[in-house]
Length: 611
Image (cartoon, rainbow, N blue to C red):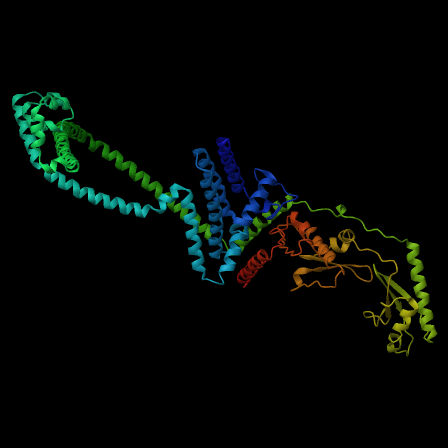
């Protein structure tokens, strides 16, 4: 079971590594999600979603630390480490990824939010008001290195490399000093070995051979052999001593008092053992030195033979050098001439490129940009208005006509009761209000008509009546009366209207329909600020949905990107799957502060570019 879990962690590591390597921000459903576009991630939408979640929280680079953590955990499980140690390493990898995200955020580079991670942005924005920026960078860099070095031995060795180098240097100097002392003490022994070698050469005129210990002469053995006392030999039988009878008593009685105590006796015996063991070690070392001298003599002879052969071959080869040198020089001259010709051609070609005017270069850039935009737009499929619901009314046209005729009669009779001869000349019917047009008689003050607003409202049975004078540049007066049967204005009707289709606005802003029933479309880029306000239930959220829909149905996610902040967690959650989102819908106030801070920095950066 443990082996299976270890291999599962290694497989997860490989999957995450491939997902992160093939991650493209424009393909993510959460970061910049794609609904109508093909996803190029190897694992499809699952890979894009997972990579975007990790990038948003820990940053793109911090996600690789977590991915590497699965590899280390899998190896530790297969190696048989304890569960407690594995859990600690898991926690350290999370700490390392968050620390890396904070370090990148503290550097204040103009990076995208998915490269930094919201965790690092939130931590840095909280600490930068309390401590200097460089302290934040230094502190979290230290935590990052310590957490990684605690989990991976290789990184730990890299961090401790300066200390290891100091230790090795100390050991090197210490060993060199000790070797010099030992060599100084072995000079006399080497001289003795050389004299013995000369004696052996005189006796044996044959070639020097590597000899074993069994073939050593009596003179050589006399140098190495030192007899051990009998009482140190473990082979001495205690029974033999007992059989001597009276000698045992004599030996014990003649023994000094300081030998009768076991502590003193054992310490003396240990020192004697060490002395004879050191002499045996010296014996072995002296033998090795003798053998090395013999081998070195043979190597010197072989080197001399090889040098003689090399000198003979070199001298014989010099006879043909004069002939070959001429050919070699000719080939080199040809190569140098060819290289000079190529360099001259490259300089001419570079001069031709530099002679291009700035306008031509800009044209080339524009052509490339247009080609790229066209390629991107080809893959994008705009949503059709047919997916939206159609508007429906609970009244018929006859009901609408009867309402208009009845209102006209009430207006005319009301003014006649005040001896003002007025006739309704026309009307403009909108979704919720109908404006009735009247032509005032000559010599009548408009004030007299406006003062009758309350009386007219009483006769019509509607308090929300407004008299407008004049209407535009026309010499007529308008009386606006709310409709008894209101017509709902649905988003589909506006998207299918000619005003919306033919609009040249960069960011089309849907305002609805006016009192005459005409669709109103404005350009959001021409408005420095936009504030939507109103009482509860007045339709603010409905209008915000229409505003977003008007932009999404006409602009691609390459042209427009949204940042939605919804503290209520109710209004804007449904937009989490549109491709125009720069980040997922933000509901946490701390994340909102971080994103607004990024937006402010981005605005300042664009001002600098445009200035």
